[in-house]
Length: 465
Ligand code: CA
Image (spheres, rainbow, N blue to C red):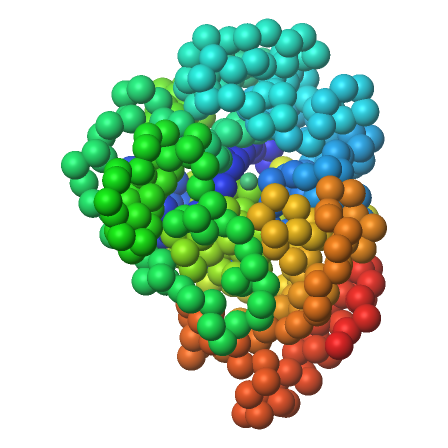
């Protein structure tokens, strides 16, 4: 079989509920929707640690963060680790990475396994960014999303057509501080974006961790995020509404350039006659709170942050308009791509290929629960370190609330506590039922499953209260 090409598009902080193919109430994404229409939409794709650097390491290596060592934003990835691009390169693929890397710079951390790479340093800038091209830093005029698309297309056009390619196209957008391209900046100005149902969450009936987090739309956005002064004379509620509109409009406008860029890449594949032989994936390193629970940012194991969008198009394997509800994780991406390319998956990769799901064959022992851990205790947004379990129906979270020696964490312990959500009864996770007597047995079973999964992936439980 001819080895397929791979175009892997990763954006940063793009929540599925800001994509129209995921039935967004607030956004239209016609470019991205083309991938869903022609391929498969995964409705239960989850990250194992909802923050940029760790999720990227999990995606590349197919391992959990306690194994790959990239637990927080302060732990850069050792670029000697095995990754799927390295294995594809060894199997004869032409490989490239363009855009946000965010796994460190310099000889020990810069991209490896790529014939060509051009990375933003750190988070990168939206306008006239510096880019490091094969180790050479330069300032490049233009808007970052367009530059990443242009360079990706340039590389595709000069490749050797006789060999398969794997291109990682990694957008910075729509990461904070949400600076749109000039052509999109004012386009939602006279529109009112619908508010999420949980914008006015009061964090009652929940672990203390929720109220403690400093990522509230009404209180924690900076002037740089809002970009214009808050009008005088607004009530607290009106102020929150105004800030939500400012925030969400810029966030959506940043996605507009990503959507256009993806459409351009799809057009190129069509024009070059590559669409049939090319796997196209669109995903993001985690989800994001779009005013949900009154927040922006991510980190929590709550649904909006835990969920990743995942679209895949591959006409040879996947029928148009397919949808999978089965659970897939970011650690599963690497083994899946290797499997699709016909390359052996090394035993040290902890994820599992979900290629069978693409043709509707669900293995009998497919995962129905997943393990999550957020390590970066209190840093940036005062979110307590936690781990937990999500099953098809429940979510159990343990805020162990301790730095546990992790770089980038703040070394001040908080009182540990548990949360349990019954996602069938309470899909918005507003009511912690951990102490509800009706759930005693559920809690006991879930703790057993949590510890089983922890053991399986090689993590160690904290002392649990
Ligand atoms: Ca991110």
